[in-house]
Length: 230
Image (cartoon, rainbow, N blue to C red; front, top):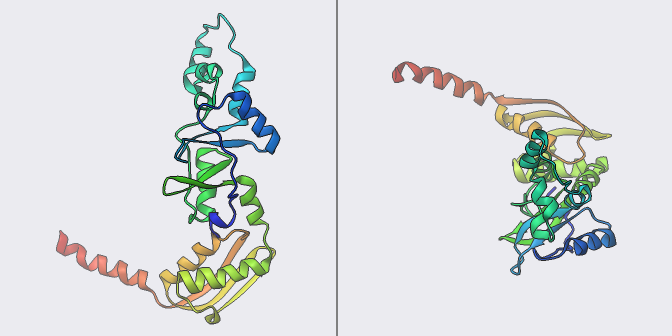
């Protein structure tokens, strides 16, 4: 499953000069937690969220000169965020974005690595949508039939060029069991790896066999060449 199958295409955005009051109003009105900040050409320059607005709620206490305060201010840009009056000053930049053709697994990895809750979807530098954690969670909540169909059609047939009729595939409560025989060991390992990335898959039990152990051949070939290199 790709990001463009999950993303919201109608995205509420703000320009860099938008006031924080305007940002807060849009967040409340549309019941969303973050907004892409876009320049006049539709390019995403940052993301402003509820968390960025909360910095204003902290307030900058006068006379704070303690070492711990200075360390916190330096690490998190607290002073700059608290002094911000518009989206450009409060936003997180540069933005973490994702292309529309990226897989759900790739989007999830970006969110986890960068600790963000949403990703602007960018195509050719321009905003085309937004995908949030909730969208990925909904993707995980799929029927066994949908999961089986994606594995058969997308993973086996179109990605790895494996005839689905040549294997036995069973999906129950998101748990996938696959058995049969494929051409080589690499293909068997790729099938299992790709299945684990399908949204909604809880676990994979693979009993795939192979006609050719190509990995053993590569290892043997490398060993044969070693003395020559020495």
